[in-house]
Amino acid sequence: MDVIERGQLLADGWTDAEIQRLIRQEKLTRLAHGRYSDLDLAVMSPEERHGLVAVARWSCFTSPNVVLSHVSAAVLHGLPVIRGQLAKVCLTRSDTGGARTTKKVRVKASHLDVRDRVEIDGVPVTSVARTLIDLGRHHGTVATVIAADHALRHELVEADEVIATVLRMGTAPGLPTARRALVQADGRAESVGESRQHLVLRPAFPTYASQVNVFDERGTLTGRVDGALLEAGVVVEFDGFAKYERYRRQGESIGGAVAREKKREDRLRALGWLVIRFTWDELADPAAMIAKVRRAVAQRAGQPRPAGTTAVAPPRQIRF
Image 1 (cartoon, one colour):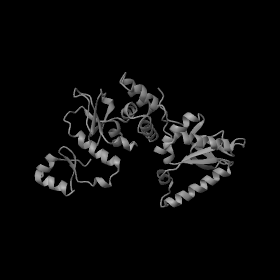
Image 2: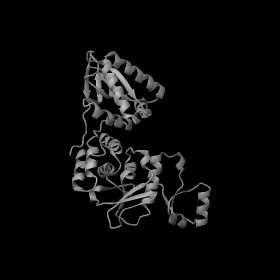
Image 3: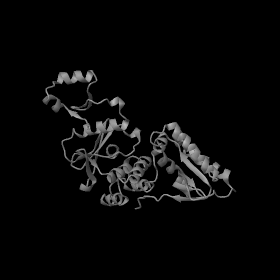
């Protein structure tokens, strides 16, 4: 991380007056007390900015028992986060310093087993397993599931690690809430949007399946869809920019990827599938999403099952 400490600048021959001048000239940005960066924060993503500021604020603590945790640890691990939760740097301390919250920092006091700590570029952070649990304890179901889906899918953590960490934490506050959130992740969603779509649809449609391979009558793969109600013959896709970035072939434009996706959808319809799509805006209204799926199921009622076969991707679930 590109955090420059005041002591380093003074050792290099800069004076405090010169440091202040560099800040006014926007050649340095103050990240925390005596901590600066010469990077352009304006071109960074919110996650990149938070990660930089988090390391700067952690470095202000002298205790070796203070680590970055919660959303700050999630950012450093490369897990997706809810950007609205990035306003404060989150740390956990396992010494006698105690918890505190300011406008920019939230410090939790909690026991940390040696297995709950890892280092990223020399910075101590909670492990992926502990980070997911802490998200579940303090940051809500959506934040937990989008991070856990990503971690499980990309094999950044094993379900057994999460379970073992929960058991080590005993009766720590918030664990029942964390468990209820973590069991809803299954590692199949390929994006944050898909995770959120699955969270809405699974409770309403118990037979909803995630990540389904659809084959035609000859056994040729027509495509993998985000979700489907197999008996009803309804495919449910999530449309987001990241989807087309992921779907795009080397050297292909976004427009080309969209056109190819349209042809894939035409092939699904030719097999008898009814395809509906959700966008980011629709995620804000779960009731409307559920109603849209019910209309699709009703529209296809009485029709034969689509031709061909399907195979559902196996889940990577956390079971307590």
